[in-house]
Length: 549
Image 1: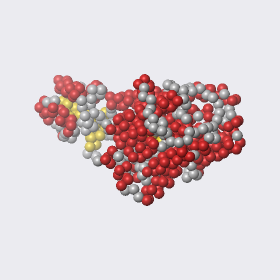
Image 2 (image 1 turned 90 degrees about the horizontal axis):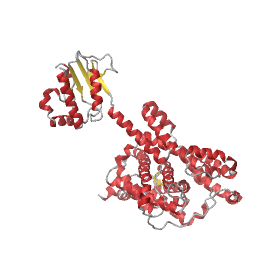
Image 3 (image 1 turned 180 degrees about the vertical axis):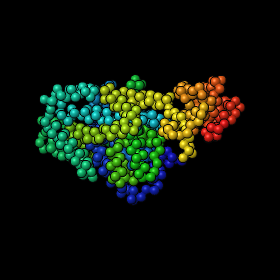
Image 4 (image 1 turned 45 degrees about the vertical axis):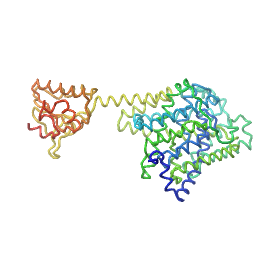
C-alpha cells in the first residue's frame, strides 16, 4: 500500500550494482549540465544565480522519492523561469530580497496546487490544454525568452517588461553601446554549444563554455572592461526558512501559480511518458502531480523557486544510463557538494555565457514543423496554435495561454454543437450502409431517409440535429431511420426535444425509427417511457431491419 504513494519503496527493494553504476554516471553528467543551466535559468527568472543551484538540490531528492518516472530530471527550466519573472516582476524589483521572497512563495503555491490536484486525482484537467495551445505557447515563449537575453548578450541596458517589438526597437536604438567583449564571448559560446550538441553530444557543452569563458575573464581582466560577471556566489547549502505568507501576495500570484502548475506538469509528464514508453513501464499522472507538488512545497522551505521536469536534461539522463530515480539523488548530492566547496569557481563567469546557454536551449522549442503539420491535417488546430502564439507574443505569457485555452474551448464547443452528420446508402459489395457523400453509388430507398448523427446528443446540438434532419426530408418522405451507432450519450433536454421531433413528424405522416441504439441510450429512453410509446420503432437492431418495414 505504501508503494502506491511512495514509489521509491518499490524500486529500492530491487536496487543493485548495475543500477548504481548507471545512476551514478547519469547523475554526474546531469549535475555537470545542470549547474550552469540552473544558474542561467535563475537569472532568466530575475533571481540571483545561486537560487538556481538551490532549486537543483532538495526538490530533486523529494521527487526521486515520490515521482513515478525513473528517468525524469527535475529542476529549473526555461519556461517556468520566464513565468516566474513575468508573474513576480509586477510585484517587486527583479533580484531584490522581496522578489526572492515572492518567488519562494510562488514555489509553495505551485506545489500546493499540484499536490491537491494529485491527491484528488484531478490530473485529467490538464487535458484541457490542447497540444496546439501548448505548441503555440511554447514557441512564442521561446522567442520571448531568447530575446530577453539580448541585454546580456550585447552588454547593454534594456527596459524590463517591454514586449517583443518594444524590446527589438530599444535594442536597435542602443546598438552603438554594445560591449564588444560580451558580444564576442556570447556569440562564440552559442557557436560552441551548437557544435558540441551536434557533433560531440557526450561532452557537456555548457561546462566547456563556462570554464573557458571564466578563464578568459580572469586572465584578461575582462570584468574591468565593462563585461558583466556573476560575481560572488554564496557558499553553503540553504537553511530552512518559511516563505512569506501574505494574503495579498497569494491573491496576486495565484494566476501565475495556476499557469506554472499546469504548464510545468504538462512539460514534465510529456517527456516522462515518452521515456517510459521506450522502457516499457507506465507513468501515473496523479502520482507525478504528487511528486512535483511535494518537491515544490519542500523546496520552497530551502530557497528553491518552482521546478519541473525538463526535456533536454531528462533526455541526457536517460541516454547516460539512468535506471532509477537514484540518479537524481546523485545529481542533487553533487550540486550540494558544489555549493559547499566550489562556488568561488563561478565568480568570473560572464552573464553573456549564461544568456548563450539559455538561447541555445530555448530556440529549439520553436516548433515550425508542428504548425505545418496541424494546418495540413486540421486547419482549425493550426489556427489554435497561431492564435495562442500571437496572443503570447503580443500580450503576456499568462494572457497568451489563457487566450489559447479560451480559443480551443470555443473550437471544442463549436465542434460538439455542429458535429458530422451523414445520409446513408447501402453498399451491396460490402453489405453495409455508408455515407452517400463518400459512396455516391450506394443504394437509396424510395420515400426513406437513413440518417447518422456522429456525436452524443445534448442541449447545444439538438437544434442543429433538427435543422439538418429537416433539410433531408421532402414531401415524398414517409420514413426516417436514425442510425444511433455513434450516439454515446443524451441529456434530458435532447431526449425531450427528440420526443417532440418524433411526435411532430408523426403528425405529418413521417415515421421516425431509431436503429443501432446502444445500451446506455436504450436504458435512458426506457426510463422516459419510450418503450411503450414507440414500441418496435426504437431498438439496438441494425438499420437493415427497419428498411423493409
